[in-house]
Image (cartoon, rainbow, N blue to C red; front, side, top):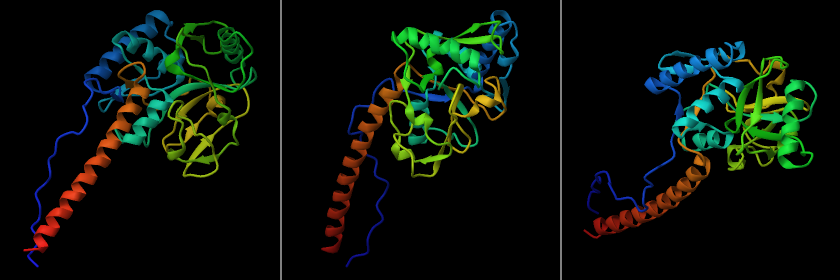
Length: 289
């Protein structure tokens, strides 16, 4: 049999049309991150009386660092003017699935979780519950998850933080009973609902869901890729240097990105099948010589 020749790298053509506006996502970084942070600080000073709960973002190592729900909502108000928004939990799961960039070792706040009008954060829980009931036209079934990208930030002197959340017209209010699962329940990436970014069920997997039973908390993707919805006791203004704010390119990016990735997966499988057939044909040709 003839010595097999090592084939050069195969460079094919795309088997699908690449969308012109592929959804994009990234941390706030570089000149863009600096500009967002400058605008953010100006608004904290002028619009929110230098609220302590908002003075949590800083810039170092080319990145905007820090995060809490109040800060993310204000950043979102800035990004919306440019046709951008902050990431939902569904967006963050898409980023994990595509390895677009590394989310390990950091945390990203994505939503509020309303379970009852009790503690923690009972004042804001009651206020938000009333808004949810008014929006739905009935008493809401709890718990619900509300993406931070669907909220506005307002001053409220009766709040412990001097701040409160207001639903926007396009706010998503997602009934999420999974967030009342037992604290420490296990789940896997493969079992994620692509619309919510939450597990469909718990029981198996190497990721962990952290929960509490009452009040208002927030949801974030943790440094170990667990989902934390038990942070209410820390206070909604909590932030540290591991926090990151993620911007995405447009409203509806989660759905668009999911459709695009499905197309790419199908094209990849077809491409690999054709490449395998080509390799087999070459092997047969070499064996016949």
